[in-house]
Length: 481
Image 1 (tube, rainbow, N blue to C red):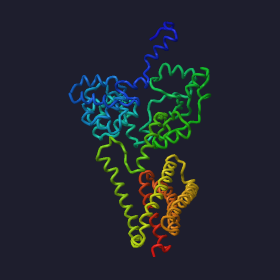
Image 2: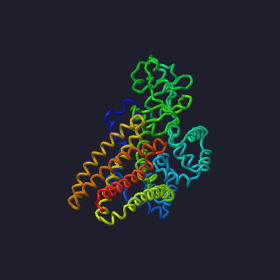
Image 3: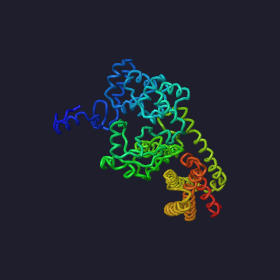
Image 4: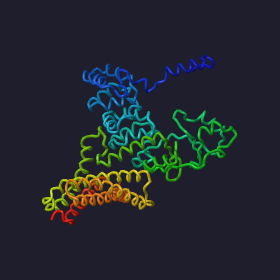
């Protein structure tokens, strides 16, 4: 503790600057490259020390790292090396390191540790982080670890695990600054100084009634700038956004985005305050949901490079099989017009173009629709308007591409071939526009994730319609006569 008047302001600032750890301090050192990633030669050095069984050397190499860098190092190593590293740096495996680990890597490492060791780590974490640590473990492992926790932590973790995954109840922080509504600003300040848990960050104080229902909030700047004699009920903000404990995390993120929230109270079914969500939780959710939707659109499952081989295989192969089935539909249409293709080779040359452009157009519209559904921009109230808008965009796109491909086909083959492929292109891109909206909307109405299988069915529709329109028009126009 610095005694008042011992140092001048410049000295204090200089010493604070010396103690401050900035991200830039770790760049271009012997462990990090210019992009602040661990250098390959540093990782090789750790591997060599592990191979030699030199735990002291391993510890000395890892000890200077930031917890986030230790997590990165663990993820860069093989499964066997991770276990050896963990045993070499036991006291460095802090809750901060565990919280930064990839889900799959954390699950494997937690299963490798004794329940008591995992419980010690969990005790250092916020409840939401402790739940994330345990939720993917086997039920028996969960019970063994929970049994080692302190009673208070045990009750909080069990309560959180009782809620469905990816809901506010699982993700919320149970450390909430809440005070009764009868206090004055002075009472509140005294309470915070004497009884408040100020070790964790908070942005506002929740005001509750006798039944523990949130009735308002007081931002910290209000508290600091309001006279002590003023009652909380006179300055608190009564209009607040309450998050139901069972609300899906994606909906929570949308509420934070829509109302520009920093934090929000989480309430149970009876309206009692049970926790809070903060914007740092939402940043993680948004990043997770965005990556998840992008991967689901491709049928890649979790798409995590640390995902076990069996899980990666099972999550991807089923959509490849589904795609194989939809491809058979397109092939059947080609087979139906086989005689026409034999008579006019140009059809075989040009028909992939129609299907490919239609598929790209469908993917564009589908990506827009899936995002609009995820952000509540596309709902039952405006589906018809969005559908009509996307159809007009598709027709304009189709007409533009049709003119270009029609002129090229007319010059290379025949004027009639140019007309046929231009007409087929407009038809297919228009259908692609409709399918790109309708398929995700139908999945959403069926309570299915529109990002999961939309691409498979949109591709089937655009391929099939492209082949059918082009080959059908070719036969109808007499090109194959």
